[in-house]
Length: 193
Image 1 (tube, rainbow, N blue to C red):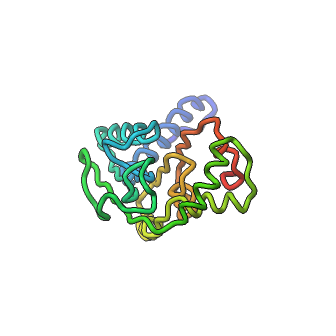
Image 2 (cartoon, rainbow, N blue to C red):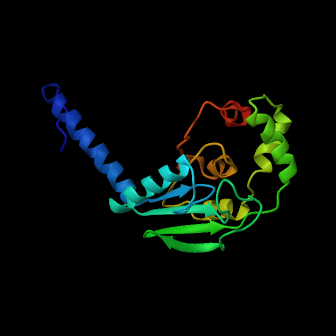
Image 3 (cartoon, one colour):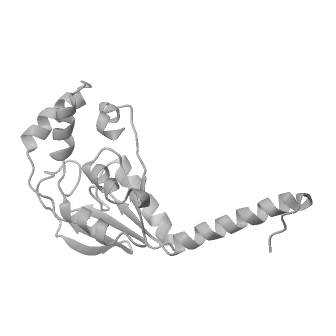
C-alpha cells in the first residue's frame, strides 16, 4: 500500500513514480509500436529513413512489438504515384512491414507547387491543399489504421509527407509524430499548424 503521510511524502512520490513507470511499461508491452512512413527498406536513402530503421531495430532488439506501415513506393526519388514493391506484408530484419498501394495523383500540379516551396517562396492555402493532396495517395493505409487501431501506437516520421498529415488524423489519440524538422519552407505551411 502507498503511505500518504507527510513524513513519507518522498517515499510516496517514489512509489507513485514507480507505479506510473510500471503502468507505462505495461501499456507499451501490450501495444504494437507501429511506424508509419512513406517508404521503408534497407536501401531507402535519407536521414529520416535511416532514423526510422534505427528506431525500429532498437525497439525490436529490446523486445517491443514493432511493425512498419508504408507505401509501395521505392523511395523519395521514385514516382510516388507508381507501385514499386508489391502490396502486402513482408518481413525485413525480423520486423513486419505492411505495404499499401499508391493511387494516381496529379504529379504536374504537385511539382509546380513543390518547386515554389523548394525555392523558399510562400504559397497560398489553396496551393497547400494541392501540395498535400497530390503528394502520395494511400487510402488503404488509412483504412487499415482505422480498423486496426486497438492495441497500436502510431509513430509517424517525418512530418512533411501525406502519410503523416492524413494518417495522424485517423487516430490522433494514438499518434506520435517524430518531425525530423529542418529550417525549410515546408515547416511554415499553415496546414501543419
